[in-house]
Length: 462
Image (cartoon, rainbow, N blue to C red; front, top):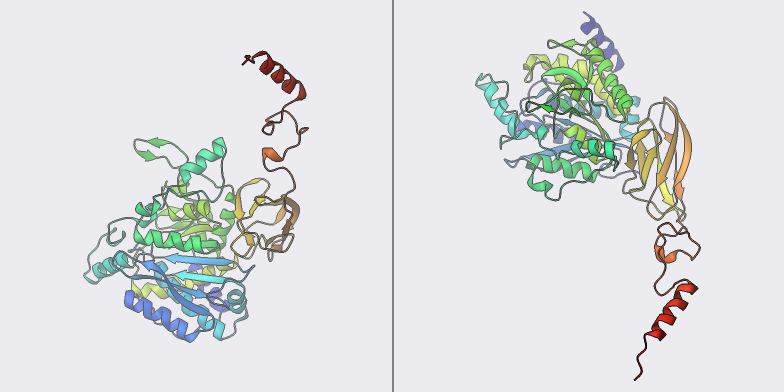
């Protein structure tokens, strides 16, 4: 009964859109739907491909923005990724429904949706694994049961175990010192991943994404990083153990936003499992190596969570409308979470944008960087923080910032070029003795006198 009440309340939040046929979409249908939305909302949408699958199918993304194809400084970028596992299909259908909903409500001038589209750049990838989906859908057509049929890509690889493992490096760095963000990839990383994985990696390196969710099926819970347990392996398996990120409290809040806006996720009991508040730390549930959400956090500025949305990985067509009504408000509220914390521009004294400036928050051992336009975004919960911006060859700047529960606080930095010595040859003779390097041919007077006397004593007459 509580599920029905929740869905009824959500119906009151939005007026119903034009009648939609709730059905599963094969690849050709998916492509037609994306272009149909674009044709209906041409001024605020764009369809683009980030690459191809093993079988050559495009990985299409639908973008919503008041300036499609353009990054507007100080406007955050957010993404949804669905159908990473080909047989987990609800996310794929929900993202298609969301696309139609955003377009329809924008055209109807729903002010909440207008504000969202005009103030956010939204990227929707309905299917990361279209090849796997076609296998799963064909099995459904033939009434072939199989929990894993279509899960992997056409090469038989699980795409959520296919990203470079950066957790090993961050766990080492946390213990021994080292970078806490934007960990580098192996030189030959492209040879280690599948075409779909490579396309997504290049995609998230090309956009300065701030927030993301990866939609899965097989459970009903909002899962947040880390996914890989810090515990050592026992008999070949890594033991489950809560393995929080430095932003654990923030991630829990993001997960709860989705869970409590969802029709029934927050109740905890779903699919035979119990998760308090409908959320879980990934490694506390089961340890997963080379996953996408940890990769986002460790290699980019993006904070990603994983949404498990249905007990049945391939729900019956009749169930899709109920699932949409149960997820619609949560999908919107999660997008709105990108507008919190602080954001701003990092520039030099001449107002030139500084790219890759590092933004550090005291007490949170995870930094973010400014993007190609000099703007940065740092998700934070309400509170007072000490924030520092640094860049090579510039003096750092530190400010105290109080963040409220509403819109993000605008905090700009203007860094001054450093005048302190950057190389030994610029140091004066009184620069101290620790690590001191004297310029070539510059020696103390007593040493020069002693050297001259030794040379004279070693002269041999002609």
